[in-house]
Image (cartoon, helix red, strand yellow):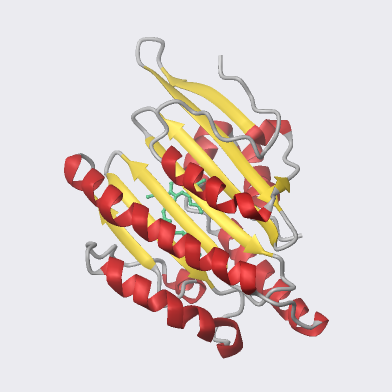
Length: 258
Ligand code: DBV
């Protein structure tokens, strides 16, 4: 049986988890920030269920990794491996709102129909030059370098658009060797560069006024409420774990705006 971890900071141990190298890269890059564990109740830390028939069982494992520090309100990853159904790495870093910085958001999803890749530094305050100008001028060159190597991801929900930056990397890739090659040659280095930029911004950010921090905090709440309301994984999580567990997980763990 699957062994639960003792703390949200322990690396995720799901066997054959497609996106494990991505989380491990992020954990290593976050070492200088001396994260402490983020309190997450046991029922959300590690969870394994078996779906399907006895003859053809499908094991679904979910682990939540999370940490916090002075500069980081919460860095958390939802990690899911469901045999023949999907593999997910959903990663969000919310900065301490005393810093004038965007979120880091990654949604790497493997489904039977292909991989769906979303990577961005997302504004907490939309259309605010003070909040975004210094970020976008460094992010857009990365976006231009990597996006030209990727197929277009297609339309995204219209109400989601304001939450993305002009550096939103968004693509759909086929399963199999062609997709794998693009993941290792484009998605992995792009993830590292977006993360490096974000962590550099975090390391060099100075504290803002209480007033400004309140505006940033309100913007963060608006974003988190949107993500909780529109979580594209809701249907899948409901199917695996039921409605009550899923709503609590989405609102209290993944996108807590309190
Ligand atoms: N997405 C999450 C969390 C997930 C997750 C917490 C725990 O935010 C997985 C898992 N994303 C997930 C799954 C799908 C998507 C799709 C399972 C597929 C849903 C399906 O096809 O049934 C970016 N993720 C998507 C899509 C987008 C994103 C645009 C496709 C469109 C859609 O189905 O809505 N990242 C996602 C997003 C924001 C973001 C909407 C908004 C700010 O940062």
